[in-house]
Amino acid sequence: MTYAPAAPAPAVRDQGLPEPVASRLRRPGWRDPRLVTGLVVVALSVALGSWVVSAASRTVPVFVADGALTPGEPLTADVLRTADVRLGAGTGRYLPADEPLPEGLVALRVVDDGELVPLTALGADADVRSVAVPVASGLSERIRAGAVVDLWFVPDVPVTHEAGKSRPEPATLATDVVVEQVDAQDGAIVVDGTVTLHVLVPGDALPTVLAALSDAGTVAVVPVAGGVR
Image (cartoon, rainbow, N blue to C red; front, side):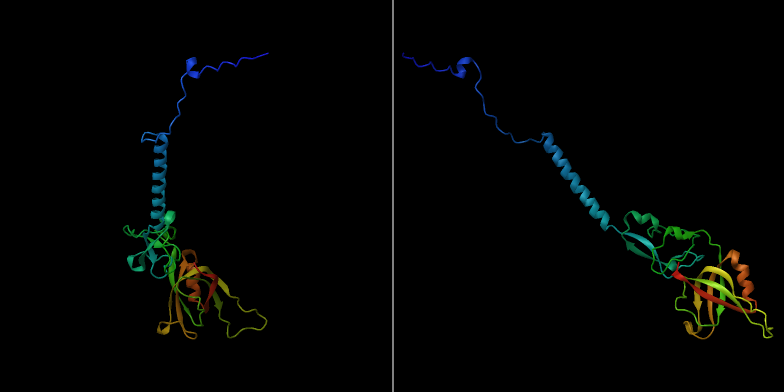
């Protein structure tokens, strides 16, 4: 049996279908939303980076204690100096030096020499009074302006002390008082000799301290662990 060759399949064009056309990639134009979004992201990243670097290197002027400030001491330009510091978000916690110095403020606690002056350490009044306390014995090197001490009264032992009677015990006059000033002979603290301490006594302890200073006995100054407020 002999088979005749099959007839060729008709071409696509013969069926009336369009001939496929290869698509070409088009260069994105300025109106392409993807291009616009990318440019916005890049611009925001550059702006944010510049702001972070600028904020990190920005300094602000604040007041610094030029010597120890003690409670009740008036806040004036003579006891302050300025410093440019980087504080970031903590700028509002300290006394700014680019604004006029407020009037009528005093220190409520000790601000050590060179310390930034915090706003929480300032107020309109401090209920303390400066009292001069003569000290006849040697003082610890820890006792200086700004140091925290306790005041004790040591009664004198009577010359005609009767046998069998207990000696008078020392008594606490005031605790956690701040040394405002130390006066010594020749301007220095001496081991033997009279030294005068100016201490800031709270108002409620003032009568007790003044009575002890006029009584027969000695006022002893004892440093408090921790040293300076």
